[in-house]
Image (cartoon, rainbow over all chains, first blue to last red; front, side):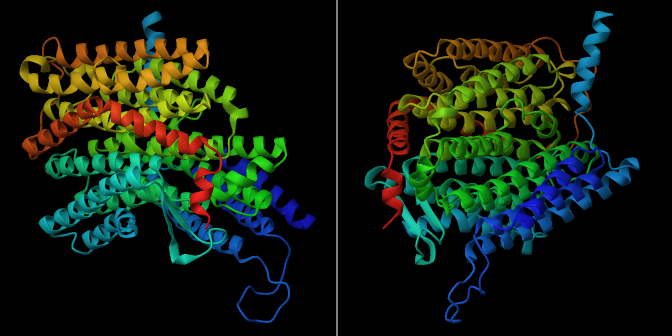
Length: 120
Length: 493
């Protein structure tokens, strides 16, 4: 298992987590991009060492494990689609309020402040 | 049997594709969607009958070895939950057809076909025998739920939709990383093989995997402290969509948790699960008390009820798992019905806010009766289905002499009753509010909506009629899940 790949997974995960703690949806989208790459790399690493292309009858002794590759491919397609959906959401939010911030639960805040007003 | 299993997954998907094709033709679109959902629901009852008589049925898709291929496993647990879920979706679709013409109706061009995609994902999530297909099923459900939640594009929906999408996407990403960890540790994502290989791993690795997937499924199931996205987002969607989400989405998280954590025997996580179950029950019930909107009170109840199912699972005994399964079967229809009635209240009064409604007990007594039955059931009063389910969970807790969690469960039940009383006083008693919003002139096909709701209420009553049979089936399913090797022996050949 390559130490470089492990460091890359760690770095991508750390950066991704940092970015999705932001309020701005465009940063969160970038964060999910990084996390998605980390997950795909992790899947590839989990499949074992490198080898020839996993095709039937190509004569190679050591072929790469095809299953994590298949899983990674599915994951890439899904995260691609969802990134586009998030971008559309950010655009729509921009139309409404001129920013792309993820807000708190408004109703919850209303109930909390109502309680404070009742006490005062 | 293979064909029946295929129908539950493919018929709704095909119906949604066709429905999108002729989406401008209202009648053809509604008939197609309905036919697809009906075929799936009908097939699921035959699956239950078959599995109850002949035992687990396994489909090796493409005839691959389970180590590399996809398997669909209709064991008793899956077969028991599937008809309940698919019937609920069918009832909601009837309600939706009736509601189309009101201003609160979802956009029918999209909502019907998307409901088909969601249904297909639900069937796949229940029937799948490997973790990666479970991930794909989750994505099918979530992607359609993202669109269903935000497709009207109103400001409140976009705001809460952002929280919802970000939270669920986060748990999906964790799911993917978890799959990499599981594959690296065991060399498989097939659940039958995992049931054999995970217990052989070092204790720390086992705990790590179990804890990781507890967070993944816990986020989907809205377990404390990962629940805040739920009451924020659910009430903003149109009634029919909220009803499906409330009845099914969080329950699929719990279903996955029951399946994965009992098969791999994560009993070491039991105490932690019980603590979180207690907090989930109490925080959900107290949260419900603070709310002033029918839909938000009901949303907090979902969280509280998730705690009971988690408690059943966390006991890690046959009785506890039986209770959790029975609770799942009872909770899905009751919760959906309550949200449908919330929609009828909204339809009658123009708002689901408690301060803007009142006097419905005299104006619409049938609505009060329809509400009272599932409300008492949710609070766990005899003779309704909630009583049977709660009794099963709590007596399992007494058997395991976990007195603290039993006490917490009883207190949470009391608090649930209190917040139901709050709805009752606010909506059904008193005089009609002066602040009542004008009721729109286009009120949809009320007869169809009321018929669907009444059917569903009758359905929840039959659960308590057949409580004995359902309890036996749940117990058999729990024994299958908890006996090591039973599931694995069926799937391998």
